[in-house]
Image (cartoon, rainbow, N blue to C red):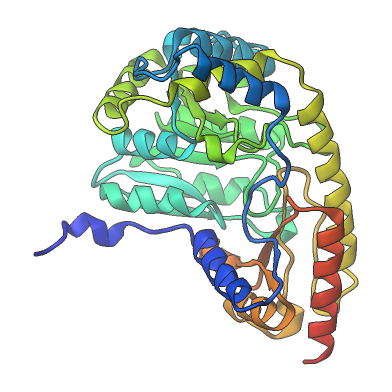
Length: 387
């Protein structure tokens, strides 16, 4: 029996592979500090949990419309209208079990052989994986440390062509924590219009901006009707296991993405959607506390890494990752990932997990306690001193 050829083009997300290695070491009695997974260590706020329990008790355990319950689609439309300063209608919203389906469905609906898709590199690996899966060609835009991990706009312009079907953005950015400026976004918007390209704007970390204000490319003239916003509840509300994401897009595309939901998941869990309504419309005190905690953790890990010989770390402006250069250590990214896990008991990700331009870097998630971050820093310093 043979698999379809397209399966050979499908990539993976190595964070889960490293997690499995770390769990295996823990089963042997090793203590591992987990800085590999991009998952908040906070519990979901109680008001959201209670909303889900209430929904379950009231019988919200049945199928829902494939695009999501009207109450949640309306709440999302209101949220995006307010936070992005654009007019959004519920028929532009599709609710999915997690944010990844919006990547999957958008790229599947738009890209095919002969098309090109601009992808940030280093970048979330599922972007390139899905572009390859469709038979289209991913075109990487290098995100360089000397550019604060933003697009080099002149290089970006040189890569956009009439074959460009989709431009993928992620700001704040995973894995670097970089944030695109309004000037960056304006130049990208101009290129998208000039070449009749659509934009997939992954804004899952939009609440996690520590310097300046978040800007969405939809705020530029002509981009609202050619942009797919990806957002969700996993990061802001510590709801990774709830599997709740959504896309906001032109209504004509939302209908097609909804059809892909029909053909794959049928719908997102009903009680989770009612919890999401509460997340958006209920008190925002807990999410604000989480973001302030991430800010403190960012400063601890950046300051600590910069004291370790061979490491050089920028202070990220958003998300909850740092992406230090390790070129001064003489080790490759993969060598450093293995070294830190096996010799220091600290789980990280090689920069190459996010693309070829990640060589010479490792990613740390600081979605862990200050105590654990300090413990990891101590272990790394000791392990490096033994080299």
